[in-house]
Length: 384
Image 1 (spheres, helix red, strand yellow):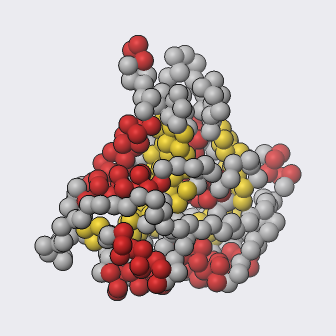
Image 2: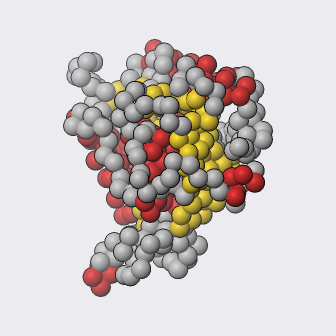
């Protein structure tokens, strides 16, 4: 029997007023054709100081260059003050309805920074998602990026990036390329990342009764964090939201809705997710599954010689059967299966977690792996 501890961690953010966006996007010429969005202040999950305002402003400049109307900082500040809005890591129904009615905003862009490191080898990891406003906030687009200055050193190390601003701009360009595809509707389904067996779960169980053709809805709650890295439970949640959203047969509930409902109901889950807690989430959002888990380790590199490492457990409870539909254990280091010239080395925990979450999400969605037995139980799982 799988069991663990799941603690719902509350976090809050506030508007970063250190720097303000000076650009004034042209007003929409056609209300039906121009997307109107608000860009919330960045959620800092890095555990360190980071130039949040500078990164956000760079995002806004890139977005406005796509012909999208961006709500001004003054208007956004006034809205957040009126509604006493401090949490910027998600969107609840009340806020989504209010910002649509009062500011005529179609969608809200939520920005989270997972990692920011300067020094000899800079690193940055960002997660962004676009959420619709109105009665039921829905994830329209989500994308993460995690890169380091030494990802592609090349011949004579000519590909090294030593400037953190240059690396930041590269990360934003990667996100904007995906965002442009969404705006142009070129990609109905976001591209899958290659994972292979290297990043697949080390032990997994998937209930055989669920088919592969049906479309599913799923709610993801923050992972209980037993590791040293602060906020790693919320970070891993976002990676699973992204990777599950990539699958063609899953619709993921906006995390802000889940957080707000649990706050209002004063739900605190201890010693694992109980059937009562699972019933509350499943019935509140009328979803097929609720997914939770435990983070055991989530560490970025301390030095160039130390690879990142990620270790977590995942399980999903099914609404119909009230039983565990999926359970798995995953752990990897950035230098796994790397034998020469650092080819294939993963330099950030964010990229490693993304690949591992993608491998789990594909199997939850029904992708079969002949080399992974249907059922394995590890000593660590049974010990809990």
